[in-house]
Amino acid sequence: MDAAHHRGGRVTTEHRDLVAAGASAGGVEALRALVAGLPAGYPGAVLVVLHVPRAAPSALPAILSRSGPLPAAPARDGDLVRGGTVYVAPADHHLLLLDGHLRLSRGPAENGHRPGIDPLFRSVARAAGRRAIGVVLSGARDDGAAGLAAIASRGGTTVVQDPEDALHPWMPRAALETVVADHIAPAAAIGPLLAALTATPLAPGPDPGPDPLLDSEVAMSELFPMTSDRIGTPTGFGCPSCGGGLFQIEGKPLPRFRCRVGHAWSPESLLDEQAEALESALWMALRALKEKAELSRRMAAGGRERYLSAAEDAEAAAGTLRELIARLGATAAG
Image (cartoon, rainbow, N blue to C red; front, side):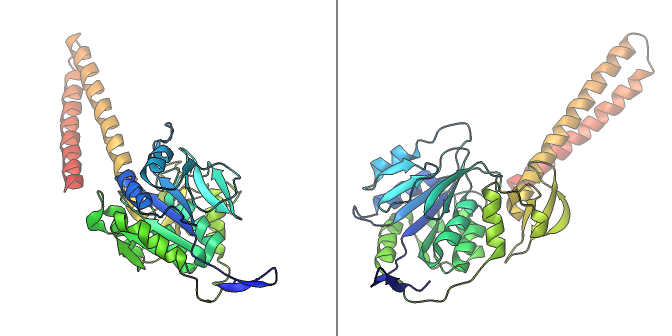
């Protein structure tokens, strides 16, 4: 659809008026600075995902309402998106934009998160196209990078918090490694930047056309019955969330991974989850060895001395495991 088109017999002009903002660790401070910089009459809608614990209600709407001139509210399923409002994803639900309405979904977690930033960004890219503005703020790991790439691919505008300004720079850095951002700014400057972007009419541009991969991934976030083997190739890796096989989705500069039921992982998040699973398995093995050593010594103390060597072997193996756990911890810290 062209930026200028006929509606009801008159020519209307489109603007960048749908903002999707994602943040994780350190994100509350960044979001407060962002909304504080928006003008009272800002006409766009701002959709926000902050990684929060799944079992706890989010206090973010109240915090953002106090921090800036726009009202902020928890997103509600089925609500029509209105300008001049900040919508916040509730705990344990993805926030999506579909046909101008908000959609809350308990679809598969992405990078271990629900709500996830990538599902929001993809849905906004699909629904708004060139009208979309994606904003990646402070956070750990790399959630949001793939979604920001989707917004860029559909002609939307990309904004990344300056990593030097972020309390946790890894999410902005990952976004900048994935996308050539249109704008890099400190959090306090992003609100005025959004106001300027939204006030500028969109120049006519080409329709990017259909994107079957984007359609499929948005459908997965909606819990539609689709499987990842249609959009990727088997990897032989297991999904940390459900144990199912992962399929590789090609992308630049790095691929992504999804299992059959839709759990999604970036390479960085997958490595982190694999490391946690490995350490958990090592601790379980260490516990089993200590229990074997203790039981064997009790048996030996009861006159069955043949169990003494089993106790010594188990204790030696436990010592080796302790050293391995310590080395893994030192590697992670480095």
